[in-house]
Image 1 (cartoon, rainbow, N blue to C red):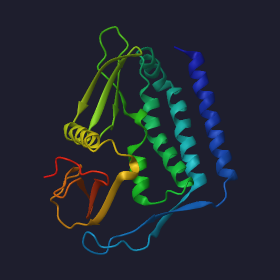
Image 2: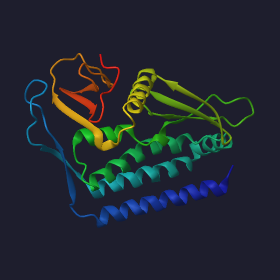
Image 3: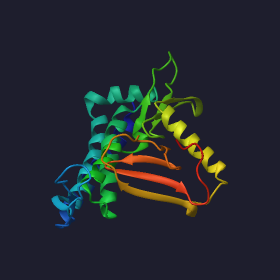
Image 4: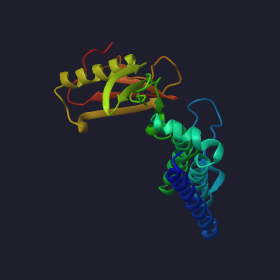
Length: 250
């Protein structure tokens, strides 16, 4: 048993509960509207003005964040969980902390985004569901008698995941899953930039036009007239350097 740690968790949990109660008592009716625009026609139809779908009480959001933190500390101080919690700590794992953080971090990110003016429902869902890269820390299978290494998974490239395995502070290995196409696109783009004479950012021209088909890919590819194009929704994005044609056009 770790009586000092259990006592500290209980005290911190009660402090977070008191903070949540204080925020709830001091909060006013301040709420931030969440907006969305619904497309009324086929793909490519201009979106109408955004409409309010609901509002989020900012004080209530902060209270939820504090209650999650309080629940984390009070749970691991509970008689039925404290032995399991301390046994995992000796193995270098804190399951409850990461489970709580996977939710509270998303709540925190969404609240901060709304405070800075990001109020679109699609953007908030993306931010909330994506969460923080730290919550992708997952324990690997531990070796007998050893502290288990950690695997950090990062969404580093489109449609891919980069895994790092860290053991006692040292990087033991890396592994990339599903990033072949993204890596080829990045490599081709870098080669085209070098072949064009290393132009500056101001030399890049971007053209956006409606495109109803589905013949373009989600990653940039050589365009028939030079440059590269990619499809985003119902639009074709074409990138060309003003100073030189990009080689490799089909």
